[in-house]
Amino acid sequence: MRTQRQVVDYSLQKRAVLRDVYSSRVGTYEVCDASPYLKSAARFHGEPTDERCPICRRENLTHVHYIYGDELKQSAGQARTLAELPVLAMTLREFQVYVVEVCQGCSWNHLVEQFLLGRDGLAAADEQASARRREARR
Image 1 (cartoon, helix red, strand yellow):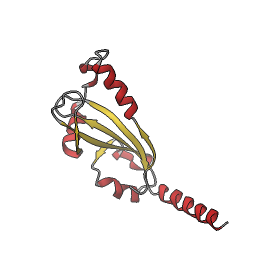
Image 2: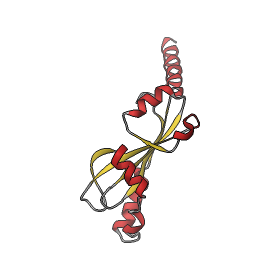
Image 3: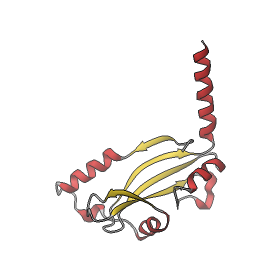
């Protein structure tokens, strides 16, 4: 997405959690705790992936995108499909997106990444492009 910025990737944290599970320092009951709301959001708003669940290895993971921001008002905290995000990014100035992976079989869930979207990113990108053009002319 063109306005995506300030991306935070949680893959190192996920690896640490999985290492603890595989070495039996943490039980699967502690990490397979997706709420019924999260599993429902995965079913109706989630994006299927080709990645297998790292715990049960039977089901493919689903990514759920949650949105938060002041302009969203009552819509804050709702799950949205990936197709809805670019439309929202062009209509709202700025909002935060949290991507959670969910296994609908064993209830594994983990925060994958978070990032900002919105029109404010277009203005920042235009400013950066202008600055690069000015530097190139010197």
